[in-house]
Length: 81
Image (tube, rainbow, N blue to C red):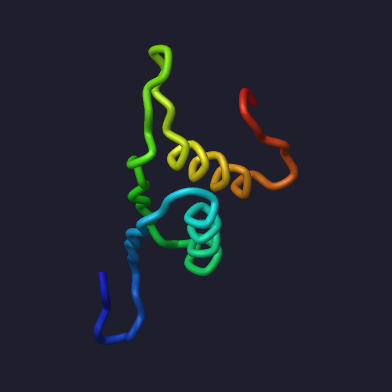
C-alpha cells in the first residue's frame, strides 16, 4: 500500500514473467534489490512435455532450483537434496 503522506511504500508486490536460467537469475536480482517485496513468478510452460508418464517442466524446474539455490547461504542444494 502506498503512503502518499510520507512518500514511502509499506507493501510492494512484484510480478515477473520468467523462464529458464535467465528468468531465475533475474528473480534473484529482484529479490536482492527489493527484499521486502512479495514476488510472484509467472513461469513459461510452453516447453513442458510428458515422457513415459512423467511430466517434465524444464523452465519451472530451472526457476525453482536456481532461486532456491541462492536462498540458503552456506548450504549445498541440488536435485534430491
